[in-house]
Image 1 (cartoon, rainbow, N blue to C red):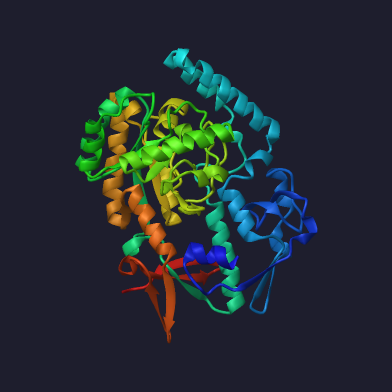
Image 2: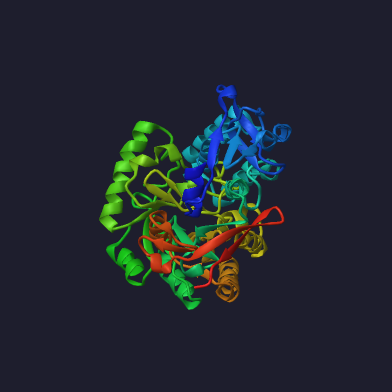
Length: 449
């Protein structure tokens, strides 16, 4: 627990934790920590086979604070890893059979996809997602389970120390309240050809963004196209290998493709990656050589691969920084939900801001050159510019998030008498903050300079 909290908050003031989960070594399942925080892993006080039944197993009842030590019936590091890395997915209420069926349906779909008219593909996609609202976990439209777990354990640590607040390194540079990134996945030649116009639109609203480009088979990637993106201050990233939906299907073939992806990363001087259709297997990420990944949704109810990392903060998967997708994709909004407004996006923005998290968007040039969709996107840009600039949101590029989060992970809080200073790379942009315990909940406060 100490290591997990220290990484998340950047504070040395974390109480010692005793984990006693030996009683259920062969039992992995869902349980709660409090009434509303869903956990997945081993727990000596009991687990359930599905999310619904987990309400009967509240690990908080078996949690205690003894002096400066916190005693837990589970390993919090393991639980947080299980959530972030989506290890809980196979034991959701649909069970292993449901996951297998999804894989077979996906494989059959990609075999015949290129022969199907667009209207029929969208009909099949709506049928596939018809029960998305009944998925019990993660929580729609944004899931904060991992972030809420960190706050709950920090509360215990504050209690164990007998204090009312703990200093930590604020999440974002220069005291920004939260963070925003815009990304564009380029899926077709038509989308590629619209990228220049899309850059004009982004710049006209005061934004720069990243473009994820498929390096093989889908379309040509001219040198001039690459140089325009990079010379105008946008980011050029790699988008899968050929976007055929098979990247993570089989380990040997995956490793072959990963080597080719790594070659393209070096060829284009790229630092980021996103898999086609957000397919992913975080356990295999060690084969990649890029710096950051953007393939994991916060909640994946409307993605072909269900699950979600349950956090609105970046996190490390080995040496790679995961920058999760935290807002619904434009394609899902327009063609699955049939919603041509920004109401859902506004709801997600408001929720993420409350947790001081990362707001990340995918808008495809392939789907917004149609006038109705483009108008929605421009409405979103206007809303982001007008509202978020007033609220000190850090509007930046994914590569800057990667650089900052890596620098923050190397920073340290050092005490000098009653004062604290931050040491480490980019310390001049870091801000001291305090987590205060007020009325049984954590409230954050950024210290004045």
